[in-house]
Amino acid sequence: MPLVQITLSGPPLAPDAIAHLQREATRLMADILGKDAALTVVSVTQLPLGASSADGRAVPTSASLQAMITAGTNSAAEKADFIFAAKSLLTVAIGQSQAPVYVALHEIPADSWGYDGETQAARKAGQLQGEAA
Image (cartoon, rainbow, N blue to C red; front, side):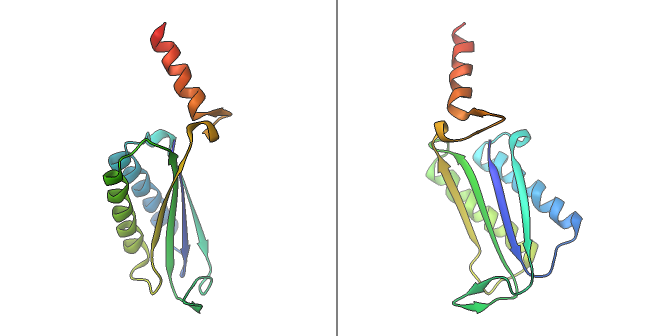
């Protein structure tokens, strides 16, 4: 169950461009990291022009993506592939930026997060109990 947060600064994207960005981020999570697309939540926050800086100077555009995933569920190669693909996706969305385009994968222990009121660890334990029955 990945949670993806994309932050963009600069001219606002049209609603169809935002929807495309959300679909593609979901596809990358599924295709590269093997996450369940139906459980992938992607939010996009747009900041106004001049809201980001690099080296202390305002830049016209910037983008970042942060994704939370369960610790230990992906290899180093999968994570590197995702970071490269997500950076490419963001660059297509906003064009070249004078600021670095950051992509961060946050690996969270399975007992420290979840959805719909249940941790990932509890879900896995429940699946294992169901398999043993």
